[in-house]
Image 1 (cartoon, rainbow, N blue to C red):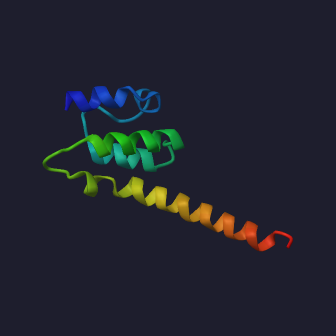
Image 2: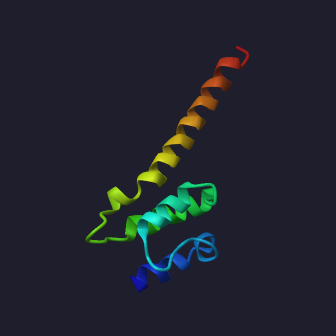
Amino acid sequence: MDKIIRFARTFPTLAASAPLEPWDPVALDTWAAGPAGTTGSRHAAACVLAVWNGRSNPVAAVRGDLCAELRRVLEDCDQRLYDREETASP
């Protein structure tokens, strides 16, 4: 666990305020997806969770909150693009 915490701390957006100790990938995922997370910290957390390979918490199961938040952002971007195209002058 020590190596993944050291790796996570190399990201400035995680080093200062992310819940890294004790190592709990679900807590990191929840924090990054919540209001405390920024765009940078979400990407950094996604990278850390993608690299982490825990036996009891497979990465695919852990990143649920973060993936849901990123999907919401993507859908919002798609909607904004659609709205912009609909209101554009021909």
